[in-house]
Image 1 (cartoon, one colour):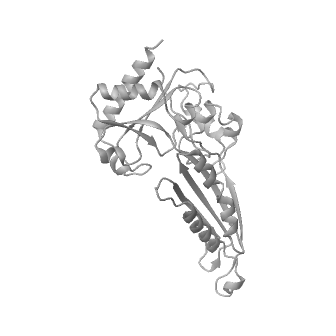
Image 2 (cartoon, rainbow, N blue to C red; image 1 turned 90 degrees about the horizontal axis):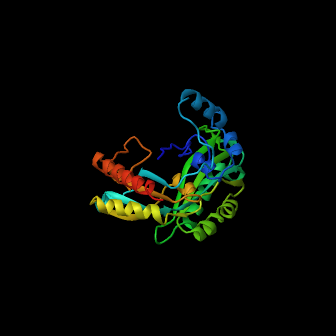
Image 3 (cartoon, rainbow, N blue to C red; image 1 turned 60 degrees about the horizontal axis):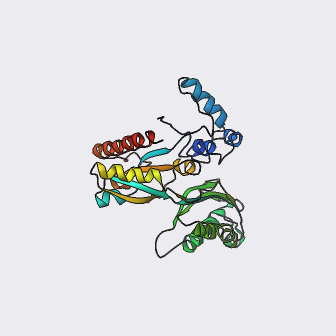
Length: 293
């Protein structure tokens, strides 16, 4: 039984996220991952070298090294378990995600001397694009997850008409057909609503929906039942390393509740009793799997 900490799971510094598990599973070539750079221009290869120098006792594993099964534990990052009073979530899979970087180019101009008819306002165009996308991605069942979480304006000066805008789109859905159909509309909608400006859409590495089936999730459910914990099966709305590993090995995830579903925030918290229960289920599952032929 081995414990693993995958590199760059969140993708907050280097793009894409879940990079370590993606390289291990053969989704991303190691060479391309090492060429990634953060906003300060530091390369992943440099960061990995510094990490290894700081932690010489952490022996790296070669990508694709054999494993029999993989179990990942996590807070739910959503409100379902807490609201239902359940202690354990047996994760059924992970919804897919497509991510896009959109750049809108207009022309900088003086805010006081340039009439509206002569402006190429990149900010106005970007807002029109975002509003059109929100309308296009609206679904009655509220299953689509569409987010613009980053927005940057240049030159970002009070008296200058913006000449350039960049924003990031995060789109998620559990159905690959919907993920394909709606995601493919991003570029045409951006072009149609850019007005006098020019919009360029770049798609980042995508993550297709993943199902967790078979021995590992079954073992998680059995362990939760045997311990007398309240549990339910539910999908993950967030991406996890388990999504990549599931393509090459039997995989499952254990969720525990978190307060108000908050994560990636200083207010993130979980009840120690729930964390203990989750750790117990993981331990039981590992013992179960390790003792199989």
